[in-house]
Image 1 (cartoon, helix red, strand yellow):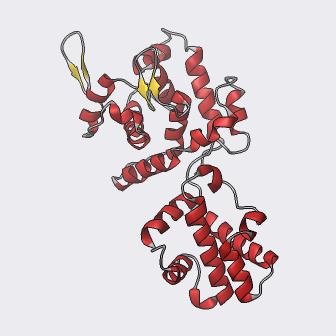
Image 2: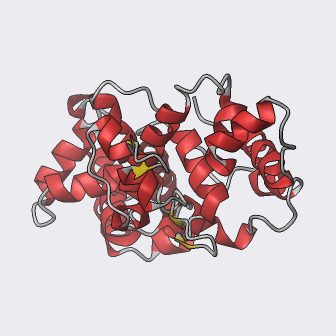
Image 3: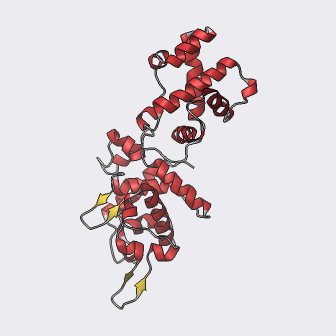
Length: 290
């Protein structure tokens, strides 16, 4: 993702040494010996725009700068004067470089901004998502992906899209404590983290005991740690004899494993909340990134 490229570039390159910046940024994607001096300067221009103007703003990252913005850039003016380039030539070269960086890393997680995403969810439950809040729905993607990378490094099989879908359905990416006492991005409780004793005094281990983790309730308000927790919680649910597919997993997540078992035994009807949960997940799956 471009945001990651920008942030890594800020860490790796001195902003005071433009020649060093030019050589190293361009070497990420191009053979420096095979390009002209003009192309090198266009690369510096594009890179510096990304670093200074784009930064971490998701609103700006989603768009290329317009022609007027580029034409007013002191760097563009100097480039045009030194190499006798027209404004159109500079603009084309500049946007070509930006498009190159936009493709620097393939998309790894679904976006609420994908065409039709919001509507597909709202068809199931009207007003569930708001198209004006797409930036909020997508603002934790990097946190989720960092958690996924960390889990994969430990040998875990993880689906970033599923984790994000659960967080989105549970809270709309606005973690809080609900009226039943469930908290954070995952909407969970203390006993799920650290276990509980039943009426006979038997201890039932929580996620921390099962997987050697050390999650706290405070962590449930941290998107990165919540993403890791959701993975382990799903992993535990999928070990149950009552869970045969992703739909069963989601019902157990939303309604509880005991209720899932009773439903499968014909002792309870599936509530509309769980029915809609499964339908919303299915709608989102059309946008999952493989």
